[in-house]
Figure 1 (cartoon, rainbow, N blue to C red):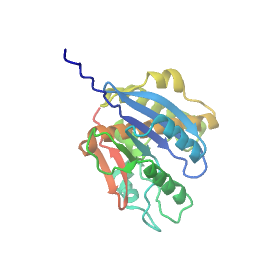
Figure 2: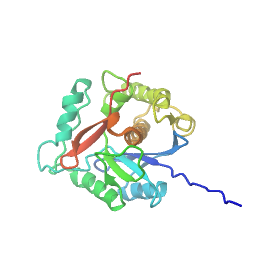
Figure 3: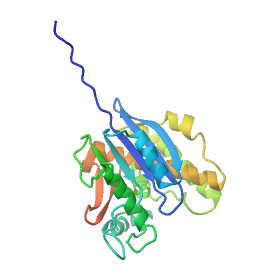
Figure 4: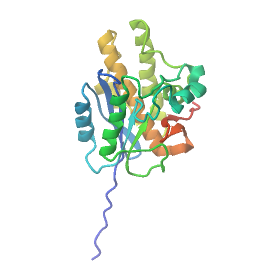
Length: 257
């Protein structure tokens, strides 16, 4: 009697980290690709770097495959001025108000963000400015939510939820929440948002501290989704600004909705 063959299918995991560049809390999102759909497994916010890595290690056990997308400059080769990818965000996305802040080794946050990338490398997450789509492995990339939001949702400018009056920020963050809820499930890979709406964030807060916490978490959802989009499509549907020598940022191509 012939024995049945059982094939264990590995699942890919995607971690989004909206890293606090100084000492502020970081937003954390954990997605997992299950049966072709992205399932939201956890959405959190941590203060300390040690706490962030404890959370990452709990989500992704060695040697499981995952790609970690960090909203922070983890590769900074230049002592002064701006990195090439920083300049390129202004070239490609300045008209959307989506250029990023310059990064160099002389700035106060540089040691924290670079060390974060090195700590990921020590855990086996290699930089992936190029990638073979849908190949299992442990990767890390730098991402930037503003241009990703513009391109994924077909916008003409960024959503200005980070600065200004609380009422204006609340309105803009509500738009982001709705775009995530309504549009990401229609893209590939699709994001199932039932747990986001029903468990993690039921509504957008209207007070400053709570609003900032929701902002960090939603930014981390975008980071995690960009990680999944990069892994799923590679350069076919993504733009890479820079490379491993200059620093780089992965941004989805513009989606026509």
